[in-house]
Image (cartoon, rainbow, N blue to C red):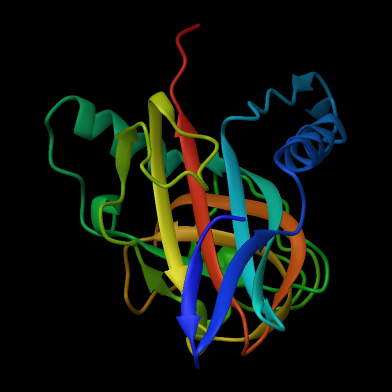
Length: 230
């Protein structure tokens, strides 16, 4: 049990649907099942700390139950350019200021494999093609600016973010029950445009274990980018 709230004169508690060890096992199981190679001769070097976490909180009687879903993300070429410019004190180009970015989610029929060359048109593809697999455009009502205090570097005060660290930049967004509802959410992206168009750049494109958000659920997401020397 994590917290207690008064709601309509009843005590409402938040409980985890799984133990911490169960969530950790599922996280590493997810990464264990990733393919060893992205393509012929190209090793799939996914770092588990470069992770995506979605936490759905739903009511069940006098309890709120938290369910976790995990995924991986890839920083795009435009995202790498942004990081390089910020590290050198340069000003990011127009449509590349991810310091004040937005999350957006999609629910394609088949999960859209993230590539570092992706821009908005690859993410928001309503038909097969543009490196998108299957139908399902971006969920328009899922666009959400970062939660207060993000992005942040180092230790995250929110204990739900298990991917924080000294060399990690964390991004987060939170959705209320009324923000949007959708089934089969499998992909997401971070961009900096309130009204994205085909050429809108992405900081990252991510894939995640499919989940639903109903009108009774709240949603919290974290995307962590880990910087490691080679």
